[in-house]
Length: 435
Image 1 (spheres, rainbow, N blue to C red):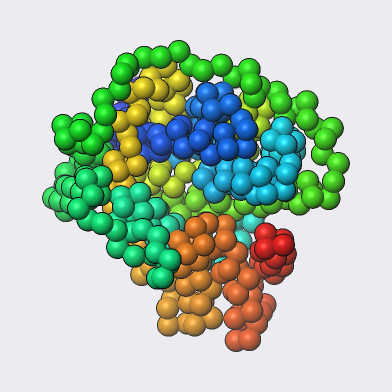
Image 2: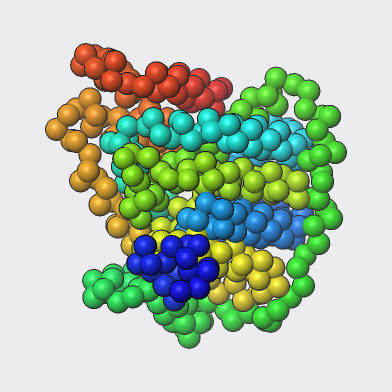
């Protein structure tokens, strides 16, 4: 056995180079959309889309390699959805703050992140979360990403009368996603290795053959320059001079903190990494997104977070950090193959998200539903994530209710003191967002 295989514990975790490589590739393909979505969202704030593309790839590559090599988990890290929209639409457009100042706020939040991660404060918080709430987080993430997948597929659409409704099934792009979902489910049911990845490949090929997905004009292209965004956050640090910006910094801190914490817990539950209700090497895993967030703030992209799409790589057998090394390497390669990635449309990744959501929903059976004091906060976590379109909002709802139900049932002493603190923090957080 090679030294690399020993370092990543291939034998102990019953895996191989082939399995981990396929897992890393699957995760990358499932989340490659962020390379195109993130520049689109941040360009609304006035940022250069090309520079954001490059910054997104570099920050994702560095953070994911750190996760793989140092933390040794098959979990990828990249700029998170939701927090990038908060950056553009709420902070820049809504509050009228220049994007350079907002990016400086992210840098300050990232530095705080590094400090609280280094002193293991984040790790302690994760370890005191009750087991039922942890599995609820995992199940909630499953419903959340399945909802995203169904929406991307066009199966669920906005409806002004009923909020959401069934989409138009005859739409070509929706039919393509339906094909992908059916094929992937058939492969998964037959226990075919790398079913999710094969499903995405077949969906892409069908899309190209039918003209739904256009072939790229070229395969290789130079990486766009970082100069429009590089260092802008550092130069704008002096413009952070208002209470409004303090609130913005705290929001970036809280959202990214609990998005990553919740995602890590959910993915660790899915992969079977949790031991005695604790995640081994949690501090190193949390440091990965702190590093990615810091690098991203300096070069010009929104906060990074552990990506729920990593569940697709875990689902095909990824169990070691080598999968993340593969994913991280592909992010750097993507800098020069951006035209080729255009075939990985949202209709191609949608089936993977739906199928992985089904797999993660299995965690629902681990919740003590017969105990309403436990079931109520768990239910709010699970249902809150898809309905508020936010992992952190779902966690907030459950964490606020949990101490209340435990107190009224005479179990106040069984609640860790930090859980009371978190309930108050989340209560203030939700009202601050609503202000």
